[in-house]
Length: 84
Length: 360
Image 1 (tube, one colour):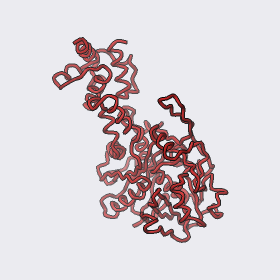
Image 2 (tube, rainbow over the protein chains, first blue to last red):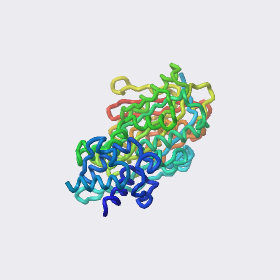
Image 3 (cartoon, rainbow over the protein chains, first blue to last red):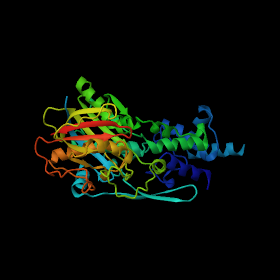
């Protein structure tokens, strides 16, 4: 399974987005605000989700802000970290 | 000061809503689910339990708003909304409505989920959402936040005495005029760790039937649920019943004094260790126990209170399904006369008791 698809799946499961399916989450949809509608509490949970499921640590806001824009940016961040 | 019960909301093994509980009490219908817990060695533990549903809560709150709220708090939210609806207060000004919640165990499942995430993945991967939901006052907080209540909010935990103890605070708030109304709730939840503990400590297979008035037998069956009530200062026109008094103590230190000519709704729930205290105190008194309708858990005392209030409102004594032939209770006329008094009596294993007296 690709990182993007796995991300969509764990997002739905770990953030209890029961009203969504992976197909409904577009790769470039904004995770926060008008897009997926996540909030600051979800951001904290997302940091945990990424570390737990992908073994990648988001150390600070400088690193996290650009990574947590969309599925695409987060997947790219994870793949880069995993490659290091 | 007497308290009036103006509305009731419940979810438990019998179903959802006060009418579902009344129907079960009237018909003697018991609703248990077959549950299986699989252990790490593959062994399967089968037993019966009274589980509560939160299906239908989205009638009051959008699903999106519920996604970070666990089962424990959802049960509370559901029962709280149902109580307000029952009292016709869903759209009322609730600015002077306080929240008091009683729970014996708190949000067990979330607490153990949080501990598991800590043990499995370490501190940095422990879910913050699980942590925030694992604190005992999470349910009361969710109720206040979702209903936008800004008056005082309190959660009381004292195992079997939680309900009686919390009720003291509710009365105090009303007496002092700090609030005009209290959304009073009792809630506990089932989880697999609880099943493990019950099997370890009580040994029973929990296959039924639950016989609460067979006081020397261990017949408890695990339950869960939330019972909420709208309490106000009584002006003599309570929708259900009035709470006349509440007393807490320890029977071995200061023996409980049961009021005369009062029917006892015993909180007996099939635990042998607690049974002996009922045997000492309520023998030869008219007594019923309703725990088989919702199962055994500390906050079930709140359901006992609801059952007593229903009996007074309906002028009908709803005997528990296993009362007949218990040898404890003398025959009781099922029609309650006006002026009848009921008392909800709950004992803990060490002789702690809570006695709540009600009348119409």
